[in-house]
Length: 141
Image (spheres, one colour):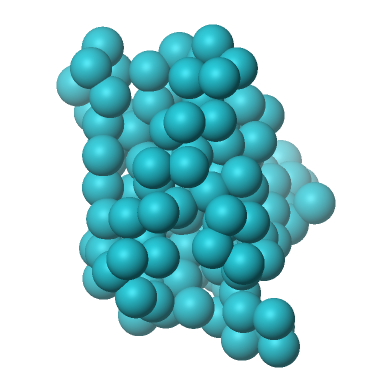
């Protein structure tokens, strides 16, 4: 994932949030190997929002599915997801607001996680950011 793309994803996600009057957000974009490429936390976010955003993105990469699917898995198999969360060092937040980022051919290029508003609104902002750079978001829906 190019740095410019990661930064544009963040900027567009935040612009979408402001246009829709969402609560202040934290946005994290990771590359396909899980390295942090871009992170922003708006004024007014709570103390650990950035870590939650990173956890949403990291969970997507760790399991290879969007965080909406992770939420369903957590409801279906809570002990399994608890064990996976432990196995990945606690950095997995299995609720909507995270998505895999794929290119036009379907190849994985990274993941995004957003936290601060409702999970559905976090996801709306995430998808807007991804689409702004011509990539595809996979929320696991």
